[in-house]
Image 1 (tube, rainbow, N blue to C red):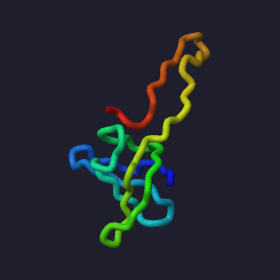
Image 2: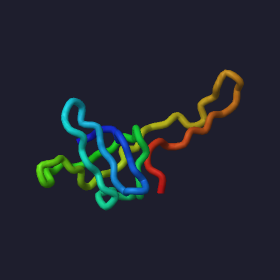
Image 3: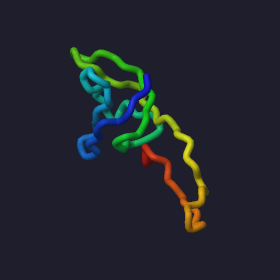
Length: 88
């Protein structure tokens, strides 16, 4: 499945993924692959499992988004954009 990060509590090492009209999906730091935390709004891919009656994300990976590096703005200055999502 794919969705966006709704919230992330870095000090508590967990957060929630957006699930549309359904209940939010819990994500723990231990279920992240290749990163230490997530930013709100990052797009992730994951497996959804039931855990004690609640939805929980497992094997969570950041979905890399194509970003327009080096595009020029109206003043002919290059805009360097950093990847949105996970910082390690």
